[in-house]
Length: 256
Length: 256
Image (cartoon, rainbow over all chains, first blue to last red; front, side, top):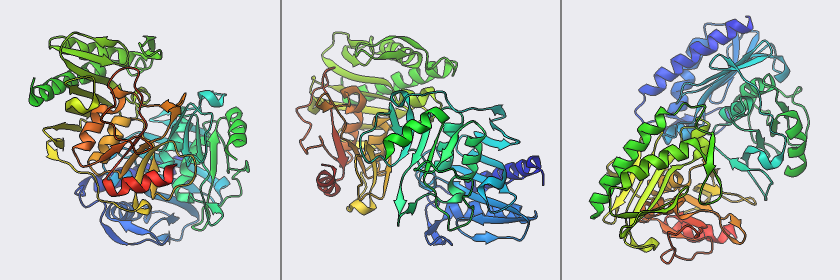
């Protein structure tokens, strides 16, 4: 499977998920229809989206890691999938939720070779292959904002006063990290801890992180450690600081 | 001018602003074209929206208080106008910004008799007349969530850990307060201070606050004081806690 093959599969999955999700009556999106492998309730929209995505991915030689079903399939390629990132927004009709999928040669973050994130509400597509990242087919890069005072920051969650220009929390981490990749925002920070570990799961953020990296972002945990050894497995957790390299060091100093 | 007359004017203003704003080339939206009466730079989209709105309001017997131009006109009715709330989102193509307008018999918040907020990106209309509030013509009410642990809260800005279920910062205060009015979120909080005063200006929030009040919200500043004596004038500032009555008291206790 080449990176381009993987990208085509990603787009096919997304097209299909979009069309099935839009068929759901908006009052039913939030109905709870089961409990996912990660122990949290599964909403109707998540269940429909994941079933649709898996139906397509089943045709390929891949192992899929996903929120509701755990690990599905037997191939050599590892696929990390979040069919709906930002379920709360989707259920509440806030036009900011996404499908997020990436392909890796192993369970390691550093072996990802194709990533794709699509805002289902607006159809904006972000993806990365061969060391480059794109939005709707156009190359993207992180911003060149270097000072905290000029920085627009996506931040889960602020715990004191910071010298940033603006803070936002939009509710779909993968899309928000893509907003850093294309310079819409200057940084994404997630310092939340749960039982001493990060809060974000691999399928929430790996696709977008690969896109951000190839758009020039520095990507580390909240203590400045690189993510190369991070795994795509169900039990891995992430804290994150994502921004251009100059801003990154300055952010690390003020968030602790 | 009856409340219904005012609502018709508001809708006419919004229709016209929408059509002019959509004509602007998206790369030009953020160009700085002057300095507003409030001392901050005016972006192209704000200037176009405000000029369009004032052109219509000029036909009526009203005094308009607005971000860029200050006070315009000579009528008995006071109009508080924010032609674009969430300029940053508008400029960045994030589908979450609004027009916000209200009509009052005096410069006092308590004399407002009609308020209207429209999400320009999605066309959702919120308004309130005669003690009732509506979204797209359907009556709305605040949520009945009573516990902090179940509360989805819009919060500018968190300064410590809170027991809420979820925190969001979406970037258009007027729309976010309408999200509390219709139960999409359970509370809106803004505890930001600038030189010892609140951060929000009347035209940012008054329209939405009137809508929230008539949808059953309790509306106070961050210390629990009612807003009835608050003014719509340029130099007034607001901190805010907006939610149903039971949650409101609990929020006041944890934000200090």
